[in-house]
Length: 97
Image 1: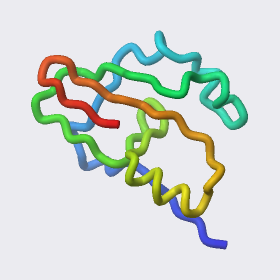
Image 2: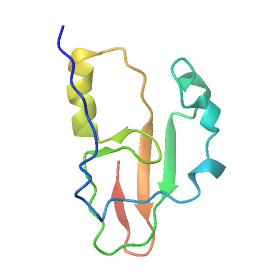
Image 3: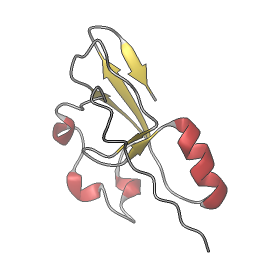
């Protein structure tokens, strides 16, 4: 069996910084087996940054990956639970799903 590690490239300095996420979800629900207690779609505001770069993988404050990466993950783990997360930078209206 082969395993792959996905992680955020620490060289990127303009990655989205989610603000006030702890007001939106209960951190106790970010664990295996508890995904059903989270809403199917969540929107988070990110800190204003005109140079924001939406990378395919974010690891802070929790693991987030793009729809493209999700397609690849589903090839190997088709039953993996996931939620749609929208990142929104209000001032410039940059978004990522």
